[in-house]
Image (cartoon, rainbow, N blue to C red; front, top):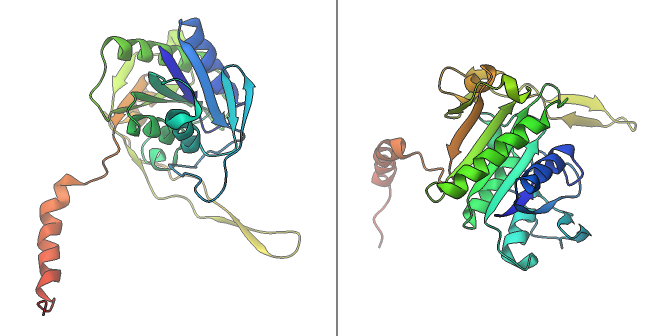
Length: 259
């Protein structure tokens, strides 16, 4: 298969290098199109008000002065002179569990691939304090998943969010299909004084696990299994449509009829 690889940790990050090597060793043609620096937390942002500069590093690697979504969007809308078969994003040097997917550039790169018509996988290594030890485990999981998708494709508009425990392969308990858990609200932002006496802020840490029971991605990874969560782009909360319809009827009752 022709595999487009991207990430949000940047083109020089070890995770993307090990992922690309693993896919090539499995016989795939791999092209890397990734940000020129760490763009963690970029979510689905596109650069619309500035030109995006790119640099070809070698025959199969392009450095992009943009977001992860920029990278995949450009690669699939004309920058490359061929059509990839699949998008694989990662390997992220941190978890993307539960609510993390809302902010994740890793997941968003995969979403952009799916939105533009390709099967897509986001792969993250659940590290402690970004101190990764077993990227090879996540790469092996990615290779297995890509092979399975080639043999048995999933329904359209399905993205696989994969979280891999930071363990040697022989200690992995297998794969589990999971739902997204969620976290408590984020910790407070952190104010500091800059050298000129002004106040600056750092975003606070993510909140602790809240919904992390059996069946969630949090629980699977904590038990030593690789979590695979099927997600999609449609954010509609269908269970609330009837309730909100009644709520809107109350709003509409107060409107003056059109003249």
